[in-house]
Amino acid sequence: MSDVEAVIFDYGGVLTTPVRESIAAWLEADGIDPASFSRTLKAWLSRDAPAGTPVHRLETGELSAADFGELLAAELVRHDGDAVIADGIVERLFAGMRAEPATYDLVADLRRLGLRTGLLSNSWGNRYAHDRIAAAFDTVVISGEVGLRKPQPEIYLLALDGLGVRPERAVFVDDAEPNLVGAREVGLRTVLHTDPVRTRARLAELVPGLPAAATDGGPRK
Image (cartoon, rainbow, N blue to C red; front, side, top):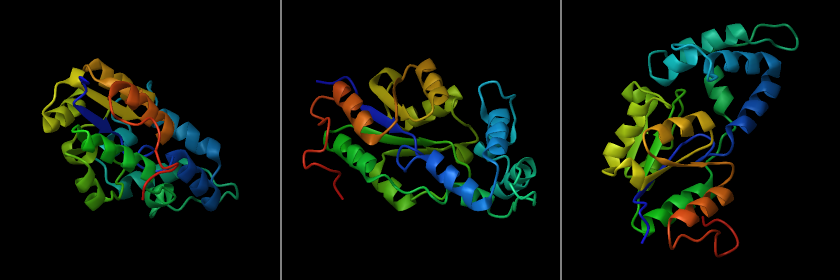
């Protein structure tokens, strides 16, 4: 019998198609120099970024998406030299993201095996698929709703409390290594998500009975 009782999943890039693909499409559509976005993201979100950057305040709900958009637009550069339109910029940034059916299938398979499932997400004012999430997860923790953000240890403990499991009995899945570092610091086992097939295979090593690949040759609808 497995000692894993629960699996906690990130949202963007794990339960959805890769965030980087949506960002790339947005940068091209808005004519933005990618280097200006990369520079800003590094200053606001890297491990060396000081506490309280606009991204940090957005993720904890201290800064609205509209106010964040104004700050972000001011840092970006268009190829044609025109000003970047701030209104709706966060929505445009995430517009290309779609639900990833294969990961939802994985969540369903885990629940059929009796495991509890959780969602833990750093929100940028995202529009979550609330009905689908509520049906798939036993607990949902959104950073902007609780005033905490990954990798702060308290936010992982909130998710664990909601599931009623100890850290050593749970696995956390995320596509960002810094968030996995925070999870490991509170005792969670971790899986770095690169695609649904690899994540399923890694979890199959930890959860007996979980197939390492879809048995019908593809994800279920």
